[in-house]
Image (tube, rainbow, N blue to C red):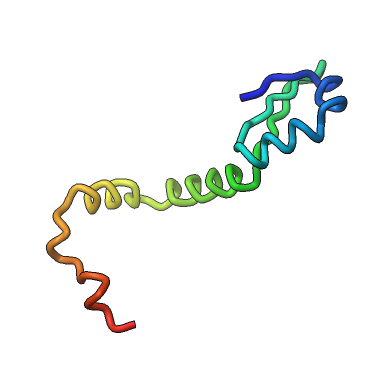
Length: 82
């Protein structure tokens, strides 16, 4: 995470945003009224998806259960009629 103040953010906005987009480098911008976070669209979408999945009751436990179960009940990809 990159930490900067609002003055330096304004000065280096292009470079900071480029690093955020290319390398998913989150930016923490401090101001006199508090802090703001800038993150890439990819990170934002991942965060929203994680929150959505976490909001579904018992889904997390089901995912973990299925992850740890055997693959014997699955159909192999080459056996699927697409």
